[in-house]
Amino acid sequence: MRDLLTHLLGDEPDDADAFPDVAADQAAAELARGAASFGTGLTAEQLTSLHEAYADGVRLSHGYRPDLFAGDLLYFCATQGMTAVLDVEMWRPYVTGRLIEHPVAATHAQLTNADVVARIGPIIDRHLRAVETVTATA
Image 1 (cartoon, rainbow, N blue to C red):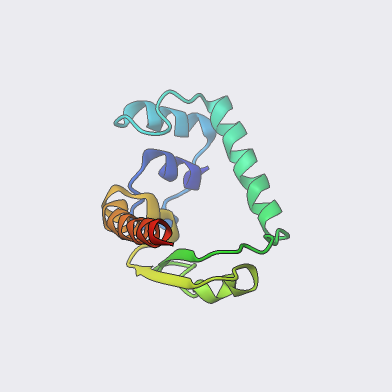
Image 2: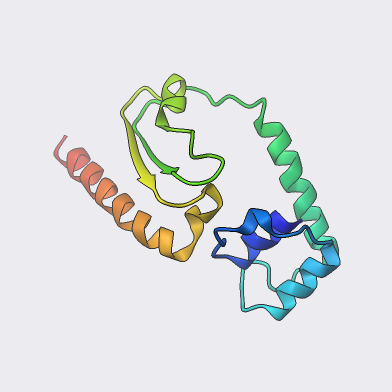
């Protein structure tokens, strides 16, 4: 439940994995006390349902293999934490186009933190503008 809580609170801290786990009612209370976030107003029952769905998704993801994608992949790799060993090459079997990797000094969970999105956003904007230009002239 702690992972879900830190995601819902936003701005995942560097040491989130060291936090003790919490029960659903404790998580709901912490969300109620905190600033407005994705989880504001969720009940313990709703948090339990979200947590179960998240765990189910993790289990399903272990056996999932995507279809082949005909295009380029813009990939942001977290260079810290347990996913730091992963890179864009793991997508090669599933992508026919270019693999464009942008390392980000963050953990995977921090990729949606406001400060990280502020760094990623302009890269996505430049990429999309370049694609628009190529598409418009083709």
